[in-house]
Structure formats: C-alpha cells, structure tokens
Image 1 (cartoon, rainbow, N blue to C red):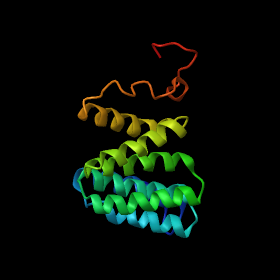
Image 2: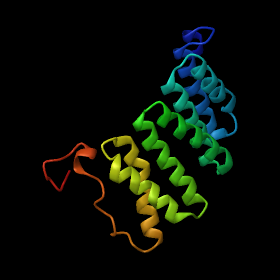
Image 3: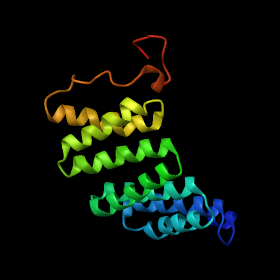
Length: 169
C-alpha cells in the first residue's frame, strides 16, 4: 500500500517506503528484503536524499548483523559511516559507530568495540539514539570481563531526558 501511495518513479516517499518494506522483511527472513533496501539506497543517492540513503545502508547492516552475516554488515555499516561523515549527519554517525562496535564485539575484538562505544558515549552522548546500542554493548563487554560497575555512570542525565541532578531519572 505504501508503494502505491508513493507512486511510480524515483521519489523520497518511494525510497522511504522501500526502506521500510525491506527492513520489515530482512529482520525475520534475511536476505529477503535486501532488494528493496538496495533499491532504496540507489534511489536515495539518485535523488540526493542523504537521510534515506544512509538509513538504507544502516538497515541493510542491521539485517546482516541480526543474521551474523558480518562481512555484509561491515560493508554497509562502513558505507553508512562514510556517508554520515561526508554529509555531516552526526546522529547517523553515532548510531552506525555503535553498529561497527557491535560487529567488532561479535568478532571477538572487544577492545576495539569498547573504544568505539566509549567514543560515542564520551563525544556524542547528546544524540540520544546513539546511546541505546553503545551503552548496551558497553554493559555486555564489562559483564563478560567481570567488570559490570567499571563505567556504570557514563551516560549523562541530559542525554536520557533527565537532568537536574535527580539520581532517579
């Protein structure tokens, strides 16, 4: 239905719809959905829609991560990372750096994974969505090493919507 509403031919609504459809397919049935995601990526590049292009690359990477196709995940996360830096979209860069850290962790490169998530939490904490992957991964790395309290308070309260020094927020 979303594609019918978006119409034929390249457009931002069509690229967005293809991204949503591909992502919905790829998580449970990877590599199904890749065709739509790759079409969204290419279309977004053609129409100069940076947000949708990066989003497609991020979503391709997540499907691949979920199914442990780490070579594909790294390829597409790398593309998203390069584009987010080139287009100066820090929120995507923070998010995809968390993806790259997760790939490192899945390969057993715990030090590299921790360095990436600490970079996100130390320099990009105000971009709230980046904190989800980074803080979860950092906690898992610390627990695996037997250090669960080492960096427990890395997140800034304002990054979580709190603040004012209230420890319950």
